[in-house]
Image 1: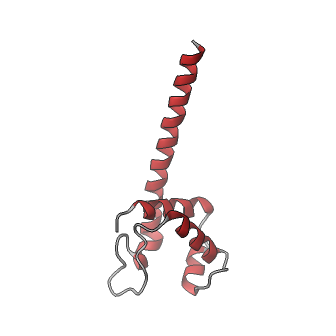
Image 2: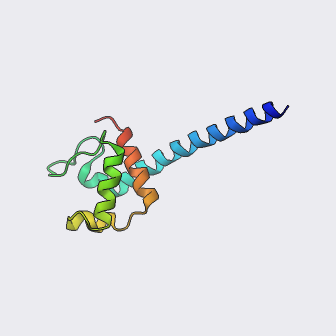
Image 3: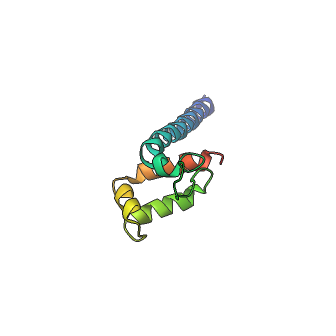
Length: 103
């Protein structure tokens, strides 16, 4: 009986964790579309934009870079201003989303 309760609890926790991950990708997609895609696009940069595409990039690299822009330890007037308004959760969502996109 205790084992069954444990198994059900474990499965419920795993399902909830899976849902949280899926939700963060949707949140990341929405935020990337609103904040990043105008310059970086989703798979490819916007027409005539000199900015690199972010689709398929390593999420850890993206998180580090965006946080450096936010904290102004990495310099770019545009990126410092844009990243300055992002929370850690938003940065994680954006990085996870772009990391999941095939270039």
